[in-house]
Amino acid sequence: MASCKVRTGAQGTRSASSAAIAVSRLGNVAQQHQCLVISILAGVQLRTIGERLGGHARLIRAMPNLPALIGAGITAYYAAGSDITQEDVKQTEVILSAIGETVRVQDEGQLNAVTAVSGSGPAYVFYFLEAAAQAGEALGLPPETARRLAVTTFSGASRLVSESPNSLAALREQVTSKGGTTERALASMERDGVKAAIVRAIHAANERARELGDELARS
Image (cartoon, rainbow, N blue to C red; front, side, top):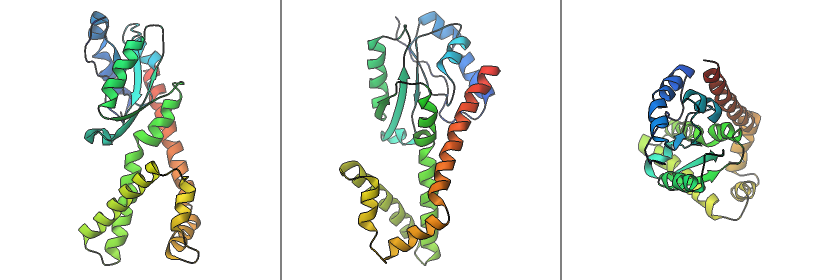
């Protein structure tokens, strides 16, 4: 089979119409060259893409995230079907590992959860950092100092998580001294339902990913 580069869209596709346009542009190329197509359309199932490509079945679906821009992303992908070879999987790993870590999922349905957790995830981090920096400024810190403290604290904590054998809860408890400032802050977050709100938000993103796929399938 010929080797060629085909792209079906961008992460965070906002509507079924834009996804349909992206897919329709690929049909002739994919069929003519029997390309390996790696789709990064949020929510859009391989079955739908294959139908829009005239029955093309050499398809893999993936979901990267924004830190891929600096080679620090993580991409989950789903590869199945009789037309997918081990060489296709290896090629996919090579391509995706160039932009960060890779995770292969065995159930295509899990990619909606991947989209909700890691595909959209960087925005949640930026949202938290905005709030932390804003609070620092309100407490009298210079804007650049508040931003630096928030960003470096987050990146350092993330690195510690990746290198530590301890659970997230155990690491949190290491910082939370009884009667201290961290305990007071976390108690405030619990009263405001912050953790539950984050869980609901990720569920909402998962549902929107499913809706995007359904909308394209019906269009």
